[in-house]
Image 1 (cartoon, rainbow, N blue to C red):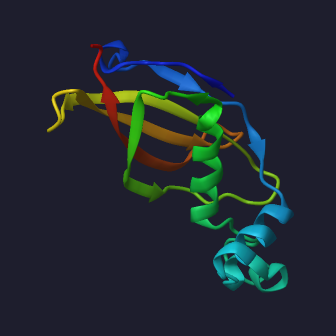
Image 2 (tube, one colour):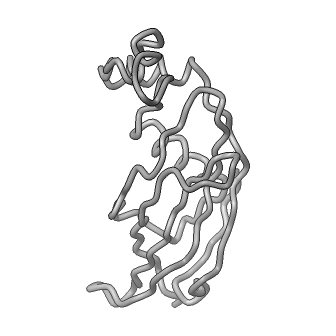
Image 3 (cartoon, helix red, strand yellow):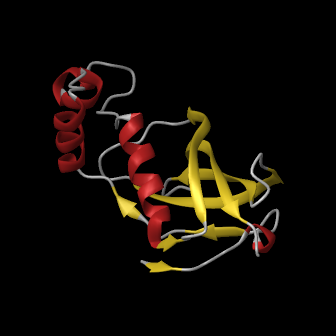
Length: 147
């Protein structure tokens, strides 16, 4: 993890970065369920899941979002402030043993109310080991302009 100052003017539409991968474990399921209180059987009951069409436990979508976004934190920009996330969709299920990584593409730049800032949108795709997109969202940022 490192700090890298990137100002609004330095962002270029379609620039892309790719994170390292991370394998999802049973411990991830248990810890996330404990943190959130979501012990829904689709996530926690392996025997019940065997009786369902999907056949195995499915990762919490919020866990995949958290881990996938956490992977993007390898580069910290002290000139940017997150406004949140938009248009999040759980596209495909993730299971124990799947490995995910994140791909971040600069998709939009625009004006902000504060003239010292610009608005940047990073389109985030979380992708499994088979190259399938499992989650998408847009990360909305305010970014300082160069003085």
